[in-house]
Image (tube, rainbow, N blue to C red; front, top):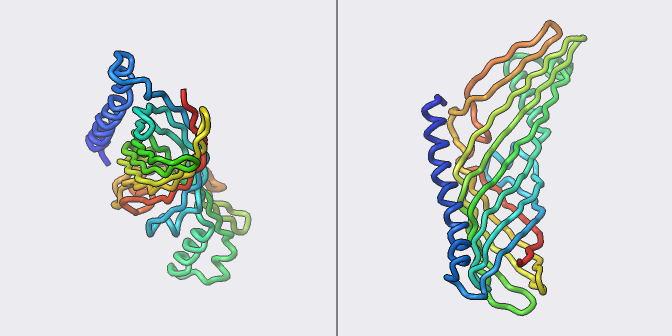
Length: 257
C-alpha cells in the first residue's frame, strides 16, 4: 500500500471521526442553549467484554478475545441516547497455526521427524481498538428495559506474530507486525437493569470490522539467527476476511449525571 493510499484511507477516517464528534457534541451545545428540557442528561459507562471471532478465517486463526469499553454519552430522553464509545480487545493466535506451518514444511519435502526436530513454535495476538458513535434506543420497562443499538466508526487493528524454530543448537526467530484502520459497523441488542442513578447492562453486539482481504497491507518483519539478524517488509493482511466479524458480549455499568 503506497503513501497515497494510506493518506486516502486516513482522510476518510478523519471525516468519519469528525462527523462522530459533531453528532456527540451537538446535543451538548443544544442543551447548554436550553433547546431540550429537563429530561435529558449525560451518561458515562464502562464494561468488560468477550469477543468471539465469527468470520471464516478469524474463527480458525484467533482465540476468544477479552477487553473492555468506555462510553461518554448524552441521553436526549429516557429512550434515546447517543455517545462516543472507545475500547480495546485482544485475541491471541490459535496454537494450531504452528501445526499449519509444520504441514507446509512437510509439503516442501521434510519428513515428519525432521519437522518435529525443528521445534516450531508460534505465538502472537491481534488487537482491535474500536472508536465509534453509538445510538441506543431503550424500550419501556420497570425492572428490565430491552434496547437496540447501532455503532458506526473506525477500528484500529494491529497484529503481531512470533515464529520460532530450534534445531541442533541453531535458532531461527521471525517477528512480524501489521496494522490497518478500517470502517466499523456494530449493531446490537441488550438489557438494561435500571437503578436510581446507575444502570447495569448486558448486551450482545455484532462487530463488522471491514479489514482488507487482499495482500495490500505492509507488514514488517525481523529474522534473527545465531549468525545475526535482518529486517524487511512485505505485503499481507490481518485475517483475510472482509469484514472480520466478532460476536461481542459485554456487561457493565452506566452512570447518569
